[in-house]
Image (cartoon, rainbow, N blue to C red):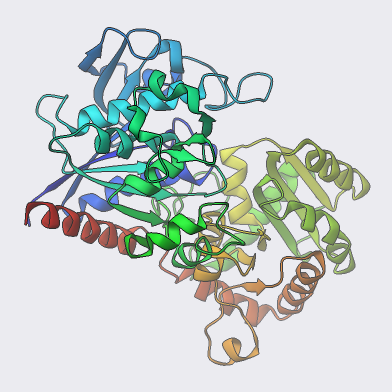
Length: 485
């Protein structure tokens, strides 16, 4: 099988910069693709953590001026990944969140920062880096959405393009007056180009101009073609339905492996589930929960937002109280929800714990120590938390939405009788439905034999990247075969 070369373009890559699942996907997928004969190089912004990781990199291409200052593309290997970093200090040498300033608002020059990323991706796609000309440029989310546009409007030979939507809610809209500044021709500002309700739509540009569109689960690919879930882009997505497919995410099963996870007090596998008890005790101690092995411990690792259904969870906490359950949350987001959960924890001393922020160690401890993981999202393109939960035998309790519906089999009566359930799935997206799901989970918990069987089935689920990598590889090869035919 001939090796195929792909340039992946994204604004995040684990472990150096991550605000959600995007970074995990971009960091994990290349290794899985390598097994399919796909050689991936990943272009990311030169944030401080990325530049530090690539301190031995070489300069692959230079710009005397790029959106207000000099820049260069550096190339190197870090963390097992072949990376290009856009080293443009005036755009990316900033601490903290990659998109938000110290005031919690978007950086005012985000339009220029991510236009530069798209333009450089297009340059590399056309051979700007000696010795590397990719056959496919794969753009992820709105921050890379202009890469297909720059390739489309640049004329001449170009590689095939793929646009992946990780979350349609984040679209990247900017004033039309920036069109010339970011380097696109006047003709690009059209309905079949980058124009989106009178603005420049970065995600819309990628969706309109890429050769193929993917999103991160089959159900989400169907949902976003509806008015209810299309976020204003449903018409375009219906028009391009033949170019759209859903490829379910996986997780890095080397990073997320309860048998080898150094963050756990007691590693374990499906044959040694009793060893999980020590992890529950360690999590309770770490978070200040009462050391109660018999209490059903619900965990949450999430952004605290409306999308994630965190307001529903806050309203449903009395249902957890009624079952004598414990509750542990790790996350950050809307100030009102942060305050609401913090207050709820104060009212439930020893029964609830809330950590505002993100801590990778606690995230792993939560998966290895919690009995169940709550994911009550109103919409969820794929979700990685429930995949980790399956892997760790922390039974996922999820809303029937997007990738949650694609990955968790509801342990209803028929599923239990046929030994098919792996978690609890509920609908509609309401506090009442979530409360009923909590009650169902507690009923299962009281039958420890049935609970152990569910855990083992959950842990047997294939949550790796292998199937997704095979589908991406087939997509890339079909695109390149079509272009050379």
